[in-house]
Length: 115
Image (cartoon, rainbow, N blue to C red; front, side, top):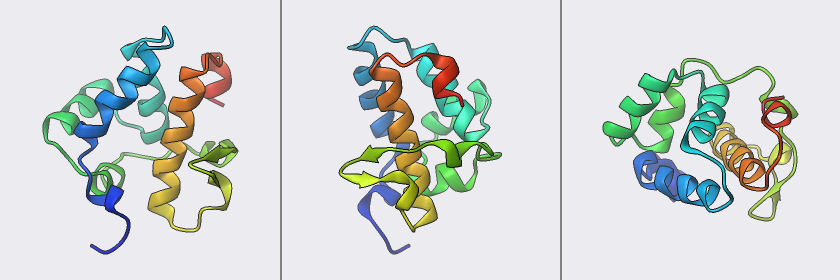
């Protein structure tokens, strides 16, 4: 697969970084998992299985049961780029996830994060 290096990065390697980021801001693993499951449609057990399988980001999103229909409401800047303007569908999904994790870490209310 051609594309950005993040596409072949194992989700299981980034998940602890997401977890550390939110826990440092007094949020929980449960909240992180809720956000990820909301976006991807994975159940908590399926999410854990993806982590155990060391699935890369491309496969993680390809196998996602359903990307939430309200994900287009996720707007803002991640890594200096507006997520709503990203043209590559896979990169956009990854950045949607990054944005949700950022919002969680910044203390935004769950009901606002889960549009």
